[in-house]
Image (cartoon, rainbow, N blue to C red; front, top):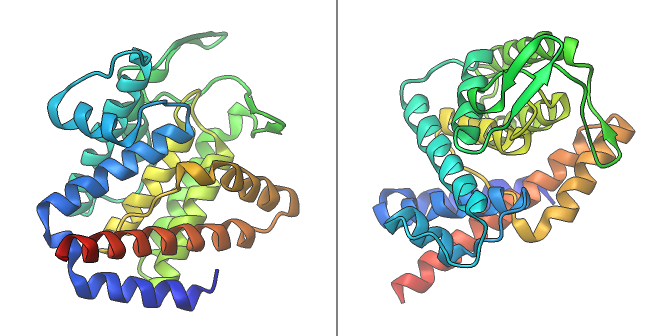
Length: 257
């Protein structure tokens, strides 16, 4: 994806002032929750997600866990929106707070040699983990790597003066956090919410990884890890961001008609 094309799409989106429309903003949040949670295995449709979050209607025939996942993600999303308004700095405690909100209703208890770890409280993992063919960093490196990531973000926020630089920082932070995999559960959702938080800090629209592009998303993550080059992932994310903005612009124009 051409970054310049994405920035032009972003400028068109901002000129339309879509986020000033309350209903439009609400359904944007619902889309973020739906796609991010579907990537993690939820089977709720977009309509079922809207009914759950609007009217607390749990869909019949779907696992209760999937509804709880949706609610947890929505709570975490509302949390980062409020924290961004206060310009709360990115630090390890913020990341733990986000994860705790995501996992509050679905976190498991893990017994380790260091004691009990409650995944619903944003506690760092105390064991080594893998996802598919990927092994993540040793648990004893998690805290220092998260601290380093937060320092990098804090240092680069004032340096990111263009929208391209700001989006790149949000995508890089997403990539690094999911690579650290600091928690037993909810790492993908937490990493995407960290990305959204940085976008909010810069007053940018919050981006989405589309559920239908899940395979390409994982492939971009894996390729960047294998090649040790984050640019593969960043290019993919610019494409997703452009797709999201185009979708929202088209939806808004259809509503006007």
